[in-house]
Image (tube, rainbow, N blue to C red; front, side, top):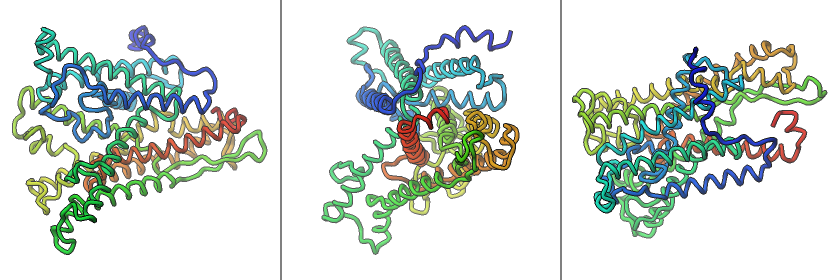
Length: 488
């Protein structure tokens, strides 16, 4: 008996959100999406019971927080981390053809979805338990332990239970948006988290201090409330571009917006014509970022998990110097230092005195991060395309089923597939590598609100695709015949 037969009784009984029967009106989709978004913001502001007021260890996710969503110390402490990690495991297993599942088979689809949910539950436990047990990140309150009479261990159990419930909630919130709303829940939560940071980076007013937003700071500079050096002096230029002025961060943020929107519009359009409806023509766009920016979540999450492993090992058993040295929760040397991604200007600008690391060490770390992101982006983009039905074979079958064909070629899936193979694999690899390069450059130069480069890339790309999907939904709503023709 194979693993599928053995696991089927469990996987087929995993709770799931029911799919809608028939077409869901656009307004109802918007309603479900808005409702889940409000619920997400509400849960990120609900602090877990039993926590100390302040955590000495800071956020366990650190600079990965904008990418993995959620909020430190809230019910959604884990964010989309377990979902993303489970997706990485499934991508790797599917890419190595170890699952033996055919996603075109309805039975295997149910098994795949059940396996994904089971893996998410496992990842919630594997990720949440170290956060609770590792000292400083989610410290239990001594006062709550005394008042309940259950000891610190019992309070830690209560904290983990709340975190577990939050992980399950965000899993089903994502499923509701995917089935009943617009776009995907994972993308929606990333947009929400990054948008909060961007708005704070632009408008936050902290007594015109170093943490103030861009606009209040410049109002202070122009009115004399904020004192910076003369623009003609090196120190003044540094303050304007790298310090409180944040001009370099503003330029980087605008560049990322412009480059992503431009890259989304660059495409190879393959002409199509309807086999039965004379004069009905269309085009199949193969975009430069064909696999979208979502595979970057998998690459960065893999890096995040490597760093989490280093933190856990250092807290529990200690690490030899060659493996990693830590200072105030941050890795400063050893193997884990070189595997850590560049997160800000302070990680590499030694010539401005922003870091005490040797130039050779910094250069090696930048090269490793760049290689990891470019190569990893290309590999995960290929996996993403193959496992989400965007590959040449699946695309050819979809075109065939819609009644379309490529003019000048026989109406045959194999023929269409050969045409698609000329474009999709090459564009997928180039697009994945390009996105990886952009993510590293954005992190190195810094962005408004200290948003990670990957988080900003994801937000712009997901928002652009969400706009396209909303426009398509409105078109289908206005012309029901198009929905019937294209299977909407």
